[in-house]
Image 1 (tube, rainbow, N blue to C red):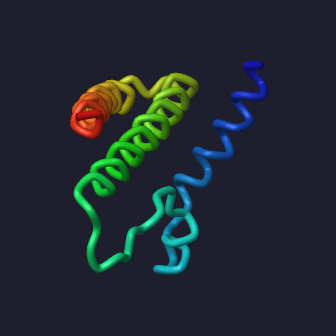
Image 2: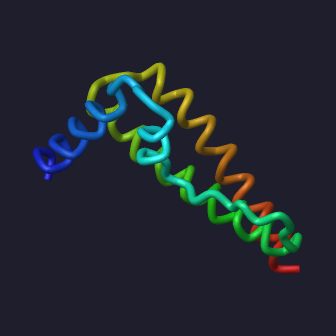
Length: 99
C-alpha cells in the first residue's frame, strides 16, 4: 500500500511541478467545472458552492498526504488550516441548503 500510495503521490507531485505553458493546459488541469450561465438560482448556486468546497477539501487532503510522504511539515500545516476552513464552509453551506 505504501508503494502504491508513493507511486500515485510521486506522479501527482511531478504533475504539480510542471511549468504551465498555456491557458489550454490550465483548462485541462482544472478540477472544477465552470458555470457559465447568465443567471442562476440562489439555491443552485449554494449547492454548487457546497460541492466545490467538498471537492476542494478532498483535493487538499490528498495534497496533505503527499506532504506527509515527502516530509513537508510547513506546507502540511498550511493545508490543515485551509482544510478546516473548507470543511467549515461545507458545513455552513449544507445547513443553508437544508433550510
